[in-house]
Image 1 (cartoon, helix red, strand yellow):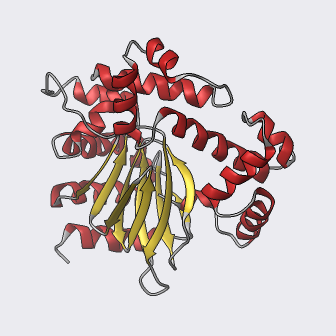
Image 2: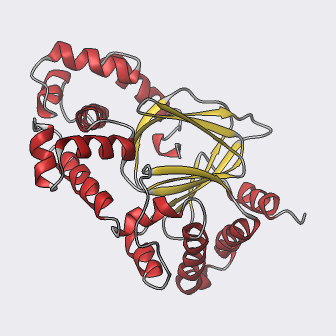
Amino acid sequence: MNNPLEKLKSLVEKRAKSVLTQTQIPRLDILRVCQPTELFPEIYQPLISLILQGSKRIVIGDQVVNYRAGQSFITSVELPVIGEVVESSPTSPYLALRLSLDRALVTEILCNMDSPSSLSETRGFCIDQVSEDLADAWFRMVRLSDHPDDIALIAPLIECEILYRMLRGPQGAVLRQIAGIDDRFYQIRNAITWIRKHYATAFRVEELAATVNMSPSAFHRRFKATVGLSPLQYQKQIRLYEARRMLFTELGGVAAVALSVGYESLSQFSREYSRLFGAPPARDIRTLRQDARGGLPKEFYG
């Protein structure tokens, strides 16, 4: 077996013990799904997801993104998505690696690299084919789980290699966004941080644009280019995701939760919740709890 991706798939398959396997290596998880899944909304944190077997479809705003075995997906922002595993079966399960990104580490690597003086307009996410050299680095990273005493010293070195190779490839522009060297992205990230923190507070786009020193038109255009949603659409999805989390963890009834996330109208909340999640709040939460009792954690999507 000389193909690095095949070697990596074989290694990961042996270590995938459940739907979500948290490895001993910091921020690295293994995902294994034995059947296609329905569309599931969630918020991706900055991460790299590498599919080794099967395929997946995700919806980001009005964009549909398909990726398959041998490809990696990267996002530099907190990204509301709706995802589904498309190709998977008990004999050929969906297999993927997920690595949460460390901003400080990306910045440190960039300080030792020649970086572009200016960055072109780019989205906050990207898909690309994994090279043999990159697959080999992932293989060495996963194999460290056989040598736990080596993880603390060697895992950061291999992670640096993975990030370095990605920074030099087509996904480098997205990865560089995390370090904040692009002023335009830094402004958008500040706006995203504000919305995430104040999602229940109404705001005017013009006022938020002013706080990050951008014109309203440039801010709106750049924001949507980065996350696939307008600022107000992004806030609405964050509100609904947070409402779902609160309802699932029994932090209040439907009316109280709707009010706490910024909705003044219960009927509007129920209507928009149903549109995003496919069912009214009470029924959706019942289904989620049934899935949880069946051992299917929502964290497996990646």
